[in-house]
Image (cartoon, rainbow, N blue to C red):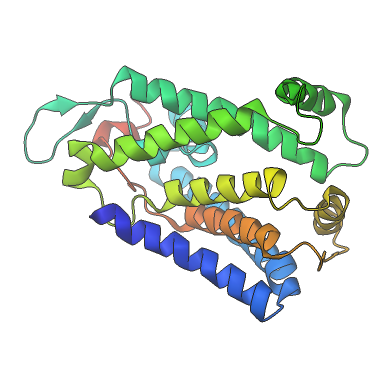
Amino acid sequence: MKFLSSLLVVLALTFIAWFGVGVLKLYAVFGIGIPYLALIIFAIGFTNRLLQLEQNNPENSPGTKKLTARRLLELLYFRSFFGNIKMKRQESKEESGPSNWFWAGVYIFFGALLIILIRHLRLFLNPVPSFIQGLETIDSFLTIGFPHNVIYITDIVFIVALAVIVLRSIYSSFMKNTSASLSYVPLFLLLGSALSGIIMVYYWRVDIVSVKELGMGLVTFRPFIPTNEGSILFIHIFLVSSLLVYLAMSSRKPMYQWSTSENEANIG
């Protein structure tokens, strides 16, 4: 099946990170070099997309700003992973679209992802803003009764919502008929990133102080490498970095065929 090739790609990336750190001990490469490189590629891709938008749309046209804002949201919030709400089969002119429950899963996924990203900011900020601390406290209220583990609601919600999206994508007849072999890569990268992060929190626990030192070192350009945290931390970093690179370099239609009207700024 087509999704297997994408799954194998992500498994291969996981193996590369494990081998690079666990066997070759390339801590600096996977903890410093690759994250910086991924951020640079992402920034270049982001900037290039903005420049393309300016070139493809008349200057000061009424809909240009609206289109630019929409494209930024697509890049930042993975809209292009899920396609438009209205889609057309290429072979038949019949309109089709994801079911309401699928899009409910997508919106829940976005909400959980946003909270998780905000939570992660504590690793890069010192001191940590009070609103992030408060959000983390609310998100982890299920920890009551589990004194030795922090249980985040959004971790559970994110995995369930992403699993629904992946399964729906695999078994949907529309996806089977039109998706490219690599169209599932971002979904599996997200899933791998989430699972590796959850493993660090609940199973192979890492020292949060060392992880914060790594994060602070990256943002202050004073790199710190935690060499005693095992491979799982660097697998997580590598998968997230790979996702950033994919976002920057992927085509404009990774899953669904885009409607021509979606690219016209003057509509609406």
